Amino acid sequence: MLPADPDADREFETAPDPEQLWANILSEDASLIVPALRAMDPAERAAVLSHLKRMADEDGWLAGQARRARAALAIAAQDPHLTSSEPGT
Picture 1 (cartoon, helix red, strand yellow):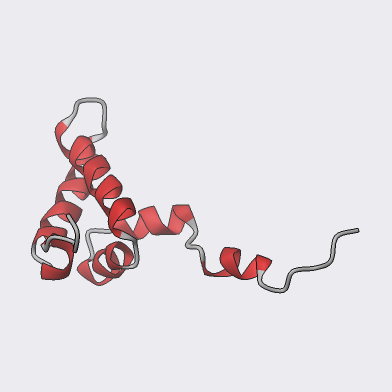
Picture 2: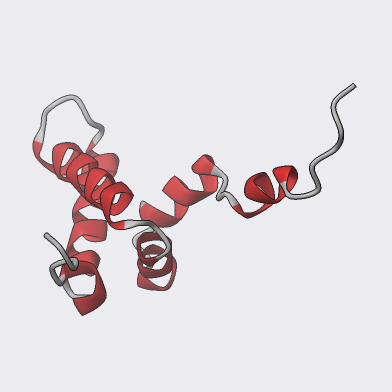
């Protein structure tokens, strides 16, 4: 039996629940969207914003999904912490 690593489970304790994360991002509520996006590392945030752009612009999404994606993008665009260039980019 392997020895228990007390730090092993901490990663999972702090990792956000993906369903809750997306519920926050698509909530149309800036008080939920901004902290969710700010908590991400730059690469993860860029991937999420790219996905939101596809949701907003591409066919195949429900009207409500596209509307919520556009709202999240608009809210993100108003936050200087989310729109400023990351160091080294």
